[in-house]
Length: 152
Image (cartoon, rainbow, N blue to C red; front, top):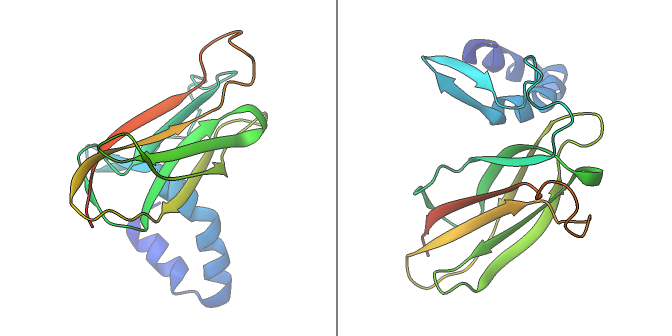
């Protein structure tokens, strides 16, 4: 879907807004490859079949963020649960929570916002992950760790 098409959908009033909600998660998951938008939750090649994973796609590593920044990604986890925590430079937890993504029916996009408070700019880490509910059986649970510059 082109940027112009999405813009037309937004301009379409109430009907366009409801379509926009359906489109946004996939668009939020996308990235540009040779000028074309891709959907990181797409499973046309079957690579994500039967796999449990958590892939955070935004923000990008090293990005400067402020309180309330948005996180996007794709997952397929037990009962669709995706956990997250934001760590300060000293390892303390600034914020934590959970959201839902894909589950037994296949991969699905997730997004959430993170409010936090720091008094000085610093390097921190965002961890987006699946809890290990199997007590170590099978493959390790999915996890993405993104280093970020946290702005006050």
